[in-house]
Amino acid sequence: MTKNAATDHSIHNTLAVRWSPYAFSDKPVPVQDLASVFEAARWAASSYNEQPWRYIVGVKSEGDTHARILECLVEGNRAWAQNAPVLALGVVVRTFTRTGEPNKAAEHDLGLASANLVIEATTRKLFVHQMIGLDPDAARTAFDIPDHAEAFTALAIGYRETSAHMNQALIERDTKPRERRALSEFVFTNRFGNPAGL
Image (cartoon, rainbow, N blue to C red; front, side, top):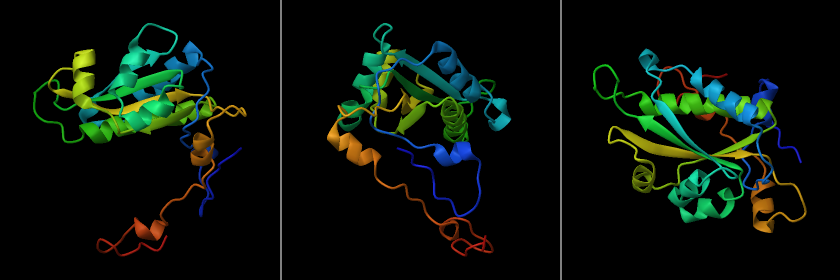
């Protein structure tokens, strides 16, 4: 099954084929591929080059970090994310290292790093499903996250499950058509809400 974006304007194919499945195979992710997706995150742009992102990574077959991350997710996400061979927490560091002042761009920059990660994963035929549904306090306790940082997102990384044994509810979620707002709904000129006409 392919779910290529039906774009109104041409974009790079890597962006067009990227989507976030719910049904993950337990097939292991090669360590080199995993290193490369985080290397891509490493090279994301950030305000003052602060790089306010940290990732806590759990590989299902190694230790208990995967299970501990899973316990930090809301119940609805646990149901499907448990199958992914790799889980990660995206942690945002909210203060600048040099000054201790608040970094208003921190969440934005974690997003940029995770976007880089997702695109690199896509080039390697991996899938990433990002989640906001997690308990930051549980993650703080489980992983000794300091007060100036917070587990902000979670990521499931791996390969799609395509066998007939896949959960029917997940099949239905994964086969829904992809939809996006038209450019006229979010690209404005002159004033907010006035379409730019692209």
